[in-house]
Image (cartoon, rainbow over all chains, first blue to last red):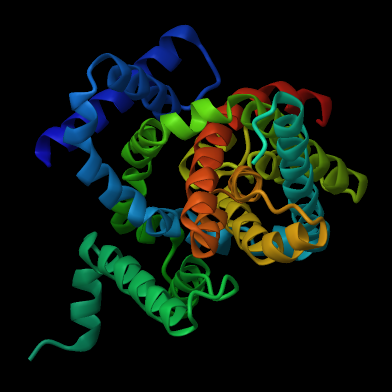
Length: 116
Length: 238
């Protein structure tokens, strides 16, 4: 487990350094994820090493955004003002994104013969 | 005997109190969610945030004091994002078999999520930091927070909007897709994961294993695409 955590942190660190050096607006951990994917492709055994720890992390993914969510107490005034429009934007855009995404998937699957 | 106020002032100085409170609040939220049969509307994060926010306000504790304890949980978002490479790699055979439909659906779904949210909110008078914070709402939380920070949004506001988006997606996905008569579980799962990240993915796993796996892939790929797209789209809206 220590090895797995060390690897996850090392890839995050490498991602942060690369993002800063290159001046990209990408978050360091996302670059770390891409790096880890490339490492899995080169050394498939790495995947078996990291998998149990990664699954533990991902099973409790929602716990990890509680501290940031509590930050809402600093935004209550703002949400009182913009709450309605923001809620409407979230609901409509989520409905549209699911409908468009699923529709395009089915359409392209039919065109390329990947349909079931 | 030590009085309660002395114990309180001792505990309020260290990270132990608020770190424990965060985990306990989440455990309560998780237990309630299980008791409700994992109904999407009884979201453990929403409950935990509500409990903690109420506790902070009644004890007059500032967010900065709270965060000194909670930062240890918050920090794990980084390694958790890196760990998303694991399900992506594990499902690479599924990804390869439906590569074109997935890439097309990814771009279409991700663009729709970002552009329509920004357009609707701006048309209704939302601007500045609030508008920027809304842009990465469909990406999984750790990525959305990182994107929000790097484009000048408010990560804490984005966290709340991400959670609301996930709950919305989990609630509407099944009835909407039934209404549209889309039956391919790959399409159903993938679109839900792209639009509503981990909360939508958890919901998709309740439908079937295939739906859930494709939702997980959609979430992972959209984490990447949102990080690339949002900085390019934002200048058109501010």
